[in-house]
Amino acid sequence: MATPESIAHYLMRSVRRAVREFALITPGDRIAVGVSGGKDSRVLLELLARGEALSGNGNYELVAIHVETASAGLPDQRPALETWFQTLNIPFEITSLELPATESLPLDCFRCTQLRRKALFRAAVRHGCNKVAYGHHADDAAITTLLSILHKGQIESLAPYREYFGGQLTLIRPLIYVTEAEIRRYARACGWEFPPELECPRKDDARRDKVERFLATFNRREREQIRANLIRLGTARGEETYGKP
Image (cartoon, helix red, strand yellow):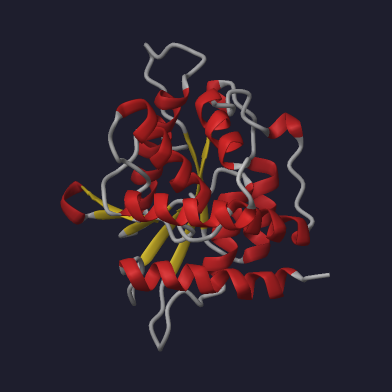
């Protein structure tokens, strides 16, 4: 049975490819890793914590940031994440979601994403970070591109990187070439459990589910080619509308 160490070694090849092709990480970077509590962001943090995303003698620093959403009526991930952050020996902050007094609850997905990003970016600036890393993976990028084509008639996707505030902060996605199946494999090897009560009750997206089921009708080789084509289209264009938070 494959170990977390052996799987991580394999996944780092895809991470380093993305870092190299899009110059996602450079020596001296201080990176805020947005950790929602799900498998994708947790895998991202563990891989970057290995310090192998850069070749040569360059190094970078990490800060884990979790935006708690209990104030918005969503599951509280803090107890489990605090213990995990401490075992990784990585500086971390658990920051609160700022809800305007006039905000209506429950939050829809778009508004929740907007508020979480705002809180994450503010925390990143407080910690002196110049980059923010998200855990979106290859399947996220491919599905987002296809959704944009089908529902908007445009090619938009998850950009591997995007600058904000005149370049003060850069959003990066080091897992852009890592598949969801590979992430699940690592999570299983680590023995991670994600109880249903900690899942976002509004995580299901009918449009994304339909596209995901459609792609699943192709055999493995065809899916790999389709995913690669969609990612290539998307990475040459801009930021998403249909992306996950």
